[in-house]
Image 1 (cartoon, rainbow, N blue to C red):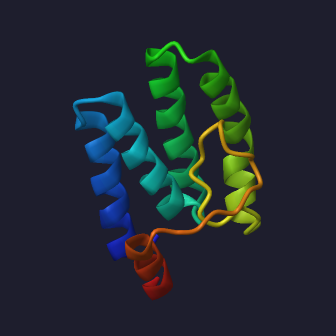
Image 2 (cartoon, rainbow, N blue to C red; image 1 turned 90 degrees about the vertical axis):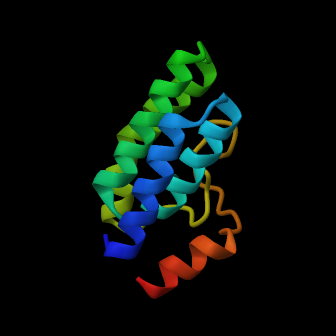
Amino acid sequence: MPSPVRAAYIREMTAARTAPDPAARWRHLERAHILSQPWPWPHTRNHLAMFALAIAQRDRREALGQVVRIVVAAPGSALGRYPEGNTGRAVVALTRPMPVPEDLAALLRAA
């Protein structure tokens, strides 16, 4: 993971841990997910954080969806088979590409 992308990923993951409300935590985790998709370990780490938040919120559907994503994250990243821009949430189809926010797209293009 190139340094600028890693720095942005770390900022988003840190913000997700410290955000005052669950909606903000999910937004930061979603942004971190988009940044992490090309790299197996950060991508998996992001899904582990999503799983932990789902458990803390007692959201069974989200937690189960994250278990599936934890299993496929690293192989998908390693093989370059991931849906670009997908937010990583269980409410979004596992293979659905989505628009990448422009600030994240610029970071990823530069990488």
